Picture 1 (cartoon, rainbow, N blue to C red):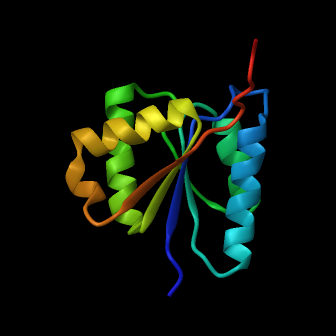
Picture 2: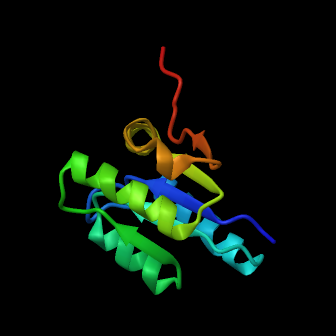
Length: 124
C-alpha cells in the first residue's frame, strides 16, 4: 500500500501564488495520479484551498485562526488522515509542523516529518 502524505503549507497571501504553492499543487496531483492519497493542510489562503479543491485534492484549511488553534487542528488532521509522512514546505510550514509535533507528539507517533525548503536564494 502506498503511503499517505500530508503536505503542510503556508501559501502566499490571497491574490498571490508562489512557486512553493504551485509545487505542492503539482506534487499532490501527481501523487494522486500515482495512486497515493495526498492531503494538503494550508494556513493563510482560502483562495489557495479553493484552487486545490478545484483540482480534486483533499484540503484542510486553517485560515483565519490563531497559531495555537492551527497547531491543534494540524495534530487532528495528521491523526484523521492517518498520514504516514507529514511533508512541510517552506519556513512558515516548518514552524507550524514542528510546533505541532512538539506540542502534540501523540499525533506524530510512528509518522515521519520531513521538510523541503523553497525559495532559498543565495544573496551576497
